[in-house]
Amino acid sequence: MARCLDALNRSLYRDFECLVADDGSTDGSAALAEKSGAQVLRTKDRKGPAHARNQAAQAARGDVLLFIDADVCVAPDSLARIASAFDSDATLDALIGSYDDSPGEPDFLSQYKNLLHCFVHQQAKRRASTFWTGCGAIRRPVFQASGGFDERYTRPRIEDIELGARLLRAGRGIELDPALTVQHLKRWTFLGLLESDIRDRAIPWTQLMLRERHMPNDLNVQSSQRFSVVLVYLALLLAALYWPASVVAVAIVVGLNHRFYSFLAGRRGWLFALRAVPLHLLYFIYSGAAFLAGCALALLVS
Image 1 (tube, rainbow, N blue to C red):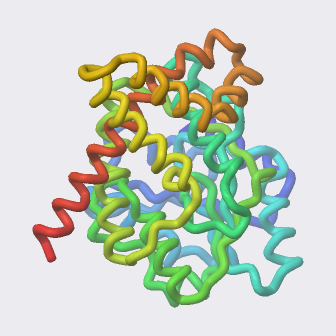
Image 2 (tube, rainbow, N blue to C red):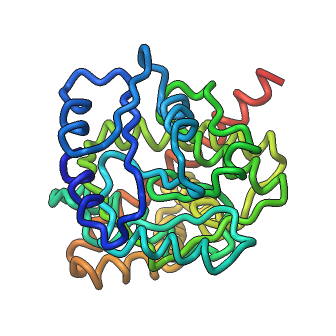
């Protein structure tokens, strides 16, 4: 939080207000935010980021709302870049950025996970298929007309992705600017990564795509990623039947994702990239399982 607010205070663009939505914190975050000069809005009890962000958006006075997470540091020119984009294009409804390639936590797992997110956004389509609150800006009238974030999400899940789906359904345009990069400070643990990726992302995202009847060929669900999931499960099946064929299937998966491994090697070296391969294969395994779980849950509630 301290680093996040300090980065905002060092912004080259100064015509902004800083609102901190405090969702029942008990660690002194609210006092720290007030000391930095931010306006703190407290929820009566813990209701989740969707409610907290909606409360802050209602109190904001600016024409453009910029959402960032407390573990994100904007660059000195981030706000200026956002303001310029909206000033120069009256048809722009929303704009998202990307994590940079310099995550704050030095351990291998945190570097891997944050760099994976960076790569996914850097390779994504410029006409975005989702909204993102890591660093996402939206015109206030557009946000208000959309109804804001769905407050049925009472913990950090896919409330930003769900908002993006409604924006697209309403014909709104969301742009992704790969040069709008911010630093992610999150420290990942292995269990925390699994919990976030499976329970809070993959399963509810699957349910959302089924509800919207639309699976974009973009981000984590582009065709190469879907094919990778199928091949990894094929490799598991073939491992017990004919292991050379299993090796071939894994080799194809590595080939399909060579750009990601080259990206890692360019930033952290080939040893880092090689260490990342087993984690990436595991990612495809639990992503496939989570997709099936999401489909099953969607059938149960239909």
